[in-house]
Length: 228
Image (cartoon, rainbow, N blue to C red):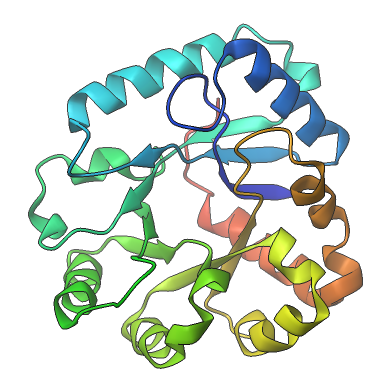
């Protein structure tokens, strides 16, 4: 199964889709590119969002997606791309931001310095038995030591398929691509980005059998997820 683990396709949830019409175009294009299941991971910023309001809005957006022709869209899972904040393991209701039906939390790390407290927060989340998947680690290639530390602690990783289009970046990502900690690829789709979606069809070309192995891990990871 071809699974897009990271996308911004729910209408009016963040700076991804601005309307149901745009969501329909995104989903139709994804389906045409062969994507069979998409995880909707709208941005959640702990300093800006109220958790209950976010979840209610996400549910309503998913209900609107349900009005679209199922033959013209991938299946859907609901999650969130949650920006790391110190102490978030103590956030009441944090489990509601996981992919529905699971304890899988897609975590966005800071683009700048990862502090000791940042690292400890991820480790605390792992200790609380969250399955932490670090989003688009292709953005953090300057933090190899910190990434290795979190992976050794149990964190899993996701790579944006589009990042693998560049040979130089593929070389830099080679170690991660061969790691069993790599469990998913994502489009990180915010609009109708054909390059991001076409990159999925090129994964076998760039990675050979590794691409299929990662998709198998994704499918296994999502075995208990709620499907819309």
